[in-house]
Image 1 (spheres, helix red, strand yellow):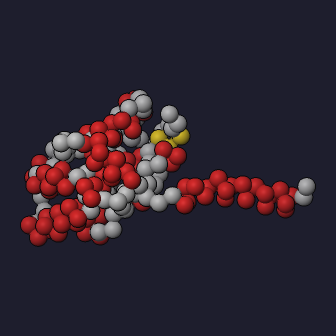
Image 2 (image 1 turned 180 degrees about the vertical axis):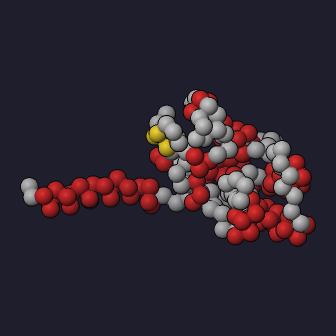
Image 3 (image 1 turned 90 degrees about the vertical axis):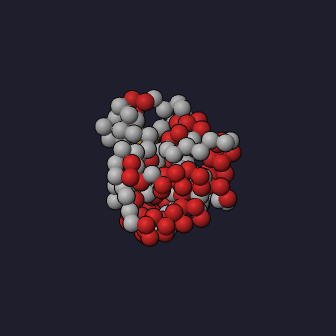
Length: 171
């Protein structure tokens, strides 16, 4: 077999293995609000609204003076605009699969932290804490982009998990 044909076959094989990941849409609606991305994303990953229900986002936005130990206060107009975006795109009525699974897992719970959502806990329960909290490249369960390579696009597929400082994760 010639080198050109072998290279072509290798390229086709690589494309075929990549197709499922490319064809799969996001698990939650990606962040499309520039103000939200700019205001919240300056300090941490701008979590997709579909990762929490409306009640949780309302609590988060009402508590910006003590936002997980930090003062993240914003002017009233900005809080109103960001809250409207978060509530309009929260998990409650989202059509995205991960948002629906999150809502089913909650029951009456309305946690402030995504990492406290029962669905989140179930999906991460087999990952040893040493690979997250004991890992200087990850440090926290809330550092989505340290492991989920397409988190910013709303994709949290297990196929795309690469734990920083560790490598691929297969459970």
